Image (cartoon, rainbow, N blue to C red; front, side):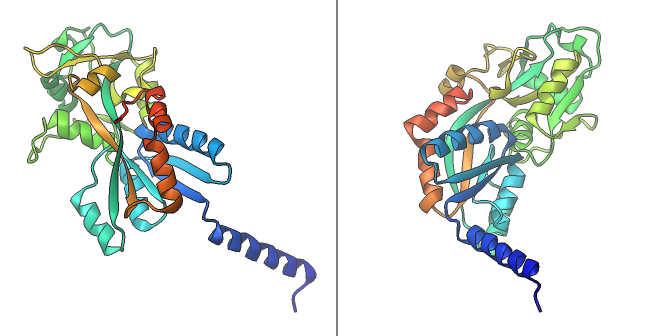
Length: 283
């Protein structure tokens, strides 16, 4: 026989469960740490204009977001890289059909401590630094100090993009890897904080994280090319050599609430938020 308190608790749990199961006005967005501030800014403004809808945004890396989409534990994955063939295969095995939406562009900034006199590097020099071939700042015009290499962890789309486009120079069959001594950090903010406090450090992140506590490096494609500042104008023009698209992935073409949110990100207001968070609009 149920006691009165137990019966009330059981009824409450059933009511909460039923509400959660039937609540079609909420969605979960997960993925790229590069995009998490952008995603949260979109969600905040969207919910102001649609008070009946709820949007939760969390980071964890592009790989984490795509894994969540594939496992059915999020509605939208944010990714700063293309989905991999093996992820598409796994998704289809689980009945998920990843659909790609390009929502913004980003320039990857390479940053050092403001006390570091080095202010410009070529792509070859960057590749040699992050692969561990150049180990001291004096080799590139800096002080007699050992270089401390900072990288995002391997499930990060930023990590993958930097490895493929800087270390491997876009070669599909490239085998170059980060130096074994590189410190792998869990977020772009962690890299920003470490660079701010370490005069010997060098790292990279989406240019939306640039602040006065770090100094960005101007980058040249080669020794004969101009050194380019990582800013919106240079990403749009294609002059800045380390830039990339940013994506949302959904299960099939967006429908219902998910389409409503995706449409918002691509609207004039949504693309305005892209600019305000220091990314580059696609429109």
